[in-house]
Length: 578
Image (cartoon, rainbow, N blue to C red; front, side, top):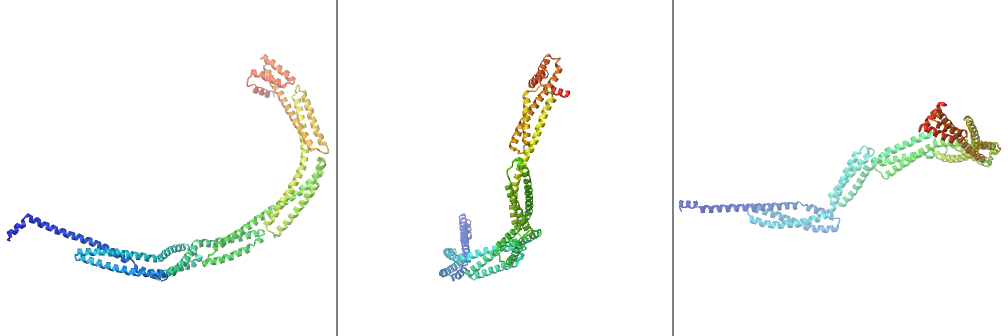
């Protein structure tokens, strides 16, 4: 075939299309193979990751730990023995998995895609089997190692708690300076126990590690108590209670110097006992022994406060004793004066007022007064000698005051009875004098106002009033005065005479009003004839003693001339005339 024919074939469109198709197929084949290779590479990479994950599980470490744990438990040892075979099988599968991965990579590297796919199928089955075996073995070993895990978790919490407490104790260094050396020793001991725990755990001596953890918890608990309670305990033991002791002794000295009896409280002895015991407690706190210290310190506070309250109570009682003693002396003096007064007044008044015999009463009262006086002297002696507490003396004094008050009240009642008898007579005399003056005043008013006529009844009333006065005078002159009858007669006289006095005042007042009205109306007699007539009628009634009728006629007459204003005009006229 010559060149021309070749050229003809090459330039033929059908040939060119065929060549193009062949080239396209070759390209597609290369692309397909490339994609297959990439997918295989990706899958192999995934299995490499799974392989490395499985290989990274520390089966060997866990198995060795489990063997160490199992030495202490026969049942667990039997289980771990079976695990050794599973472990060998797992390792064998891992080696096979590693070999298949290497073969697959070599097949891909030499473009043996088909062989690589076959290896990939074996790789998938082997990987799934290895995952299943390793997962079960790992879970089983974890159950055996769970005890160690729990210990690890618990000790981690304990470490965190320890660090927190240690930091708090460092912050409270100033407050805890008194016993901080002891605290540092306890912190150091706790840290050493943590190190021992780790050593036993590393040696798989879990029981020994567990025992150490118990000691650690005890140490941490002790440090926690120190952290929570020691600042307040030291504050009370080194501050509050010593200050309270000083206060007790200061108050004790002041009251003792003031003369208050306090020997029965044994203040110094009690304070010395508390102080000595407090020093022992402080020594115990310094070395970290705080058992029952809080209760003991609380008891010290109670006892010291009780001492302080007792001293204050004795001090108050001491002052009250002085006041009650003064009150008792005054009551006794008053009782003696009342006694003398009653005896003297009774002798003067018994025949005059017919008083009952009080001789036996006064003998009894005199004995009681003497008893109270003698007891008061004994109490005074106790106060001077200062051998009895003021609280005890105060009780006796208060009882004595009550007894003296009862006697005083009884004597006062007798005195009031005697005085009332005299007062009734004196009052009757004063009232009699007032009644006599009132009678004179009534007669003077009638004479002064020159009333033209007054009723005959007034004369009778006047006689009756004088009879009352005479009756009272007679009763007062009697040797044995009947107070009850005197008072009743006097009251009747007062009621009657005052009523008569008011009536006379009314009559006099009315007569004056009639006179003023007639005098005012006289100005208008010549001007008004009817006025003259009415006023004449009023004058006639006035002269006949008919003052009410006269006033009614006179006022009615003036009202005709000056309606609504006549009263003021009459008053003004009366003033001008006066």
